[in-house]
Image (tube, rainbow over all chains, first blue to last red; front, side, top):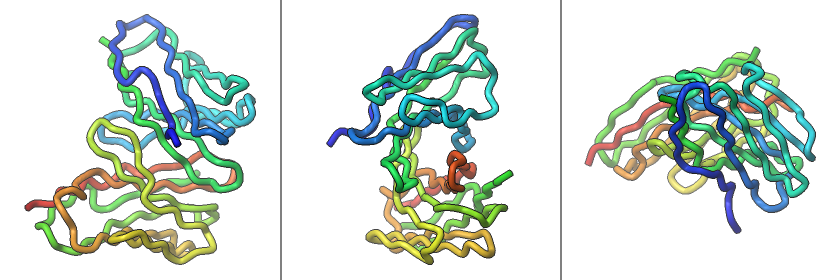
Length: 112
Length: 111
């Protein structure tokens, strides 16, 4: 079975641009969460979606938005990129009722 | 607000040693605790999940324990190998809240 897949794996953007990151959860997982990990820190929660509805939002500005599609895949959008948005963005999916998170390989975003 | 602390921040050991990584959390009302491994620039690989009702979990050379009342968990690695070199992250799940992570322990196993 395929794990959580994220695309792209790396990208470089210029300050002020917009970016869209994509995530496909493990088959059967209806919950998708997004995390930001800056170098040397643990991942920080951005969003959680379950059955296409937002279930939680971390302490991030409104420049960050996300959505979940009927097939449970998800997109994370970041507008007006800042240098400080440079980080590894991680997507996780969870099977119902277990509380166990499975992570993708991440998308490395560099803002220059 | 849940806070997770991992000690030490970095650890270097010779191959073959047994070692213990520590994780502490401030709110004992947790649903479960999960240990992850992260290789440089990569995603997270789940190692062990301990439910709040459990005391420990084992997988191969890894053993994780949980003392919920004192807000502590340990990850024990037996007979360490150079391939164990990575960052180990502890994350706490408290019901409907998202995972809260520590900053991790960077482990180097020297051949």
